[in-house]
Length: 161
Image (tube, rainbow, N blue to C red; front, side, top):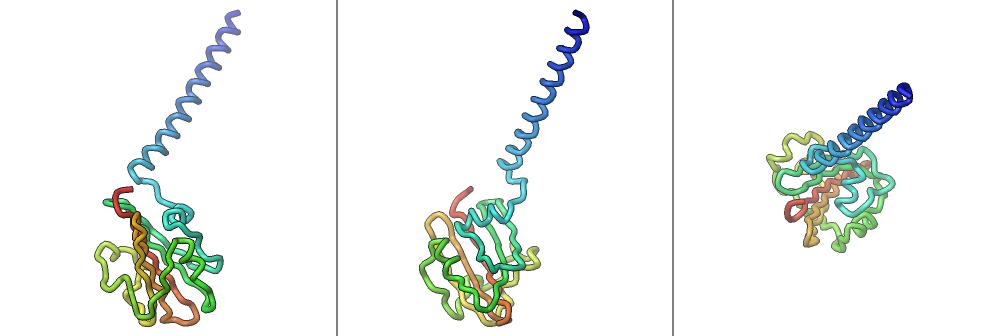
């Protein structure tokens, strides 16, 4: 009988420890999400902007910040004949890209640390600024290198997210 009680006691202790470990992991993940410590994935950035990247998108880079509001910077290249209209339509953008327009007219000090974010260096470009009411989406299509156009997208929520 004593062996039976000892075995049951070990099983109960193992069960309690397992529950505590699971609760600790779930709590840790929840805390990192609440305080914004966990890095976003590309899929979450796509969810935030409301569109999947074009199938032909290559060299995809993105980063995000959540200091005052959620901001996403996204950059990807496309083949020269790629159609960007379905991508824009998914985000609800109905305006066409305007030749010679940039939503990024000056360098932003907050973006200086993002080495791959260089829309200011574009020479041949078109762009659009779109306010959905809940967020702002700014897109620049850089055609400086006609063999590999680059899309720069910055989106930010209007208000804390």
